Image (cartoon, rainbow, N blue to C red; front, side, top):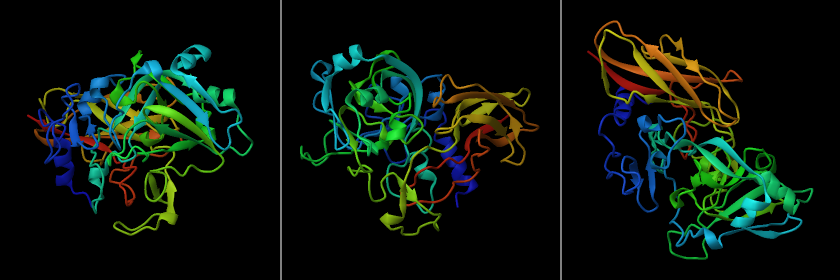
Length: 388
């Protein structure tokens, strides 16, 4: 069980100048000096919650998730996208210029969250990057709808999955090894918000975030939004690429006891992410004067669903008050919330946030069902407040 002390310690990671994960150096990225480095090979870094306060996530504040090494070159001039596979009727290669000129461009704000965001809170502990709260973003992505590309090449009636291949390099150095190749069912690929994108926030996608071309499938784990995209395969089966099988991006099909060993055949692929929220202001560890209210704001999201209601608590979940909640700018974008809390006497407090989606499903107050890889932790976020 996660104790109150561990929650407070976790909240304190977002406070003031505490910008490095325990036992690890600050970010080695000169363009992202305020991120927390979780690993260097491969490079993974998360964003302190208070740096995600902006309406759309900027490149300096966007988390970094890699499975391998960056491509040796990301020159857009020679970049192309091959579309093929068993269920592709007319395999074809598109240059980046052709994608830009032959198809209508669309822009959507899309929430991308690592499936392992919140892994550090699971007990017993599980292996993998020990993300706390900062492996989430919502930027404005511009590109061609994947569905338009699928229409251009045609699919057979038995098409099931659309898989991606990127140009990232395997940690072993073996050029024949694919680092990660995942994808989405055809129904998700054909959603209008699923993009093959070349721009982020009205600028070319930075190489660190998959430029010059990447897949963006909002509302599902970030691992399906393949970076450095150079090939799409239309499959007549559920894709079987690296990081698709075993325990990768899968959870037990049925609830299991914490610490249990779960056979691979009893694991199910993660699809839509669960309802979740994040307090982005104030930063955890804030000192607040008793005389006035504390303004609180943040973002909430719910995978394929919309967030319908938002609540705040300043007494460890004993009572809750409604917070104002903005509509999303488009489907699959996060939603802004804001409210105020008051305190009756000085001391240490925690402000908790809880979102509820449009199907009546709310965030749990504690870490939800344990799983071998620490995925889908959508427990209520909380910040530490010292009232003086």
